[in-house]
Length: 100
Image (cartoon, rainbow, N blue to C red):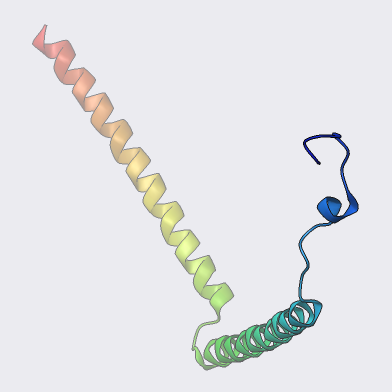
């Protein structure tokens, strides 16, 4: 915009000039890097999946059976803890009643 006329000229309305060759080369390198990274992640996922499957096959007890056993242990421990808590609460209330 010129100070005298208040009119903008064409040379002032254009944006920055990007070097399109460098921008395209950068975009291509980013795309190539993403492809390499995706390939690496896929190979890692396959390797981990195969290792876990081999580990599960070598176990004497299947992971499902092991999980079921652990769930039973947790259930029994929870029931025992609840029973002990109830017994303690009942004996504590008996002691309070005799103390009065």
